[in-house]
Image (tube, rainbow, N blue to C red; front, side, top):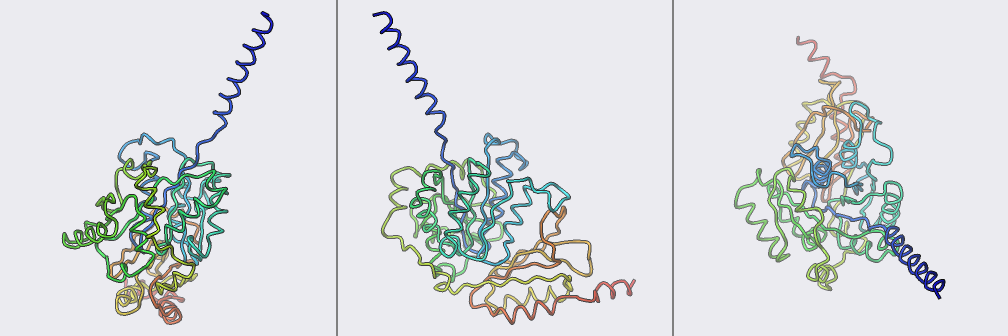
Length: 380
């Protein structure tokens, strides 16, 4: 009898141990934060802000989440993925363009829209990132023309992804200073607003109070109850945008709602959006390129330009270019850790853009024989 009791006790202890071990083996799902927003709204700046903030290197002290393992996936429907280079620089060793830490560089999904034309690449890419980097959080930056509902549907409907991933939040950004009527007409942007768990009204320092309130009113009309945060250079407190509770009934019902129009795979054609990439091994003439940028505002159809440029007047320096609407910014790259070999590599995005004409005009900016630098030397 004692022996039977001991065996029964041992069996119960073994069963409890197995249950404990099973709990340990169950891994928490990788959280996915989708960062969306129209062209030039500040998505890449936001991604960089979050990565720096979680690592405790943003100048605001160490975050309580400084041990969270993060992976980034960057989608650009253009051929050259500028944003992946910008995010990838955070994983690079200073002074070495090829010094990105093994396994930590962002996954690039280029030359297509992650929500439709390269959806299969997206699913495979997420699975590869989880396997190779084992992150706790994935920051997914969509292209400026992606429909987030198609992406959230992929996370739910793919058996492999649903077992490994959990949607944390959809963060939508908009440029308050450059909001145009054409954006509201974009089917993709309408869904970007409707899908948002948190809406970042970015670049308020460049907008008037009337502009800010106009955009806020439009957002609240399209998505009542959405959390709206005003910000400059996409800088917001990390706890307000990471670990957002999207499991509440109101949010899950809204995500599944039949009122949402899920865009078809040809939605880029519906929005009449296109892109072109221009690369050159020779630098630009600064004067000619400035004239080109100023002329873009006049009926070119270009609403966004980004990339890297060098000028013959300053051949040893590289610059980061960003153009949104009629406003552009050219900043010197202090520590060149980007993996771009060409002197010039830029992307133009817009509606009804004439690629051949724009390419010809850009080719006219190239200073093949360094005439500008020679002229500067002769004048000294």
